[in-house]
Picture 1 (cartoon, rainbow, N blue to C red):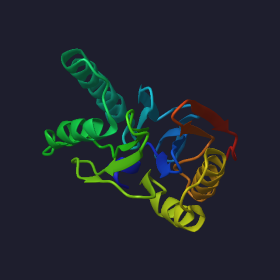
Picture 2 (picture 1 turned 90 degrees about the horizontal axis):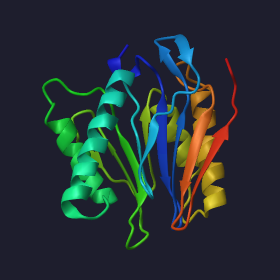
Picture 3 (picture 1 turned 30 degrees about the horizontal axis):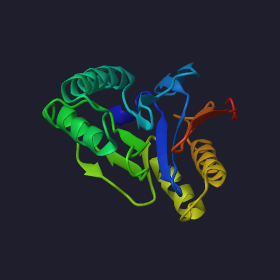
Length: 205
């Protein structure tokens, strides 16, 4: 088993029309033993900016602490909020500087640019190589299942309600076929004027 799948978990981000969504499961386990069913691996790091950190849970907690510190330093020094592309560079630097003993996380960023309200998604491998797709990005133990579901259901210019439905169905149907993730989900829909967070009840087995 890969160390990235040791604690299980998955994250998916998806673009819509002037909105973006990011969702994750809630399981925290050690291999196939489930320890908690309320572990969130998606964090709000700005008004319209979220980051998901699937992978080894100890590294998830370390990376989010270091990232929040760097963001606060940036905001204090620059006098402005961190934009999605700036966060991309920050995450790349943080991961690549530890490339010989990497953090075992594969981050996913989702957000809206404050000035243009342009949806932005991005994901990384564990040494910080970034990918900025036009539709969706996935990470975690059931990423193959997620890719198949997202390719089937996603279409261009989804409004927030349809985006919620598509990302929820993709995530739930993907992790129902994976023993290392699941046990509920949390979905964040990011729009220019609001952020909506919804929890999904799923199979508890």
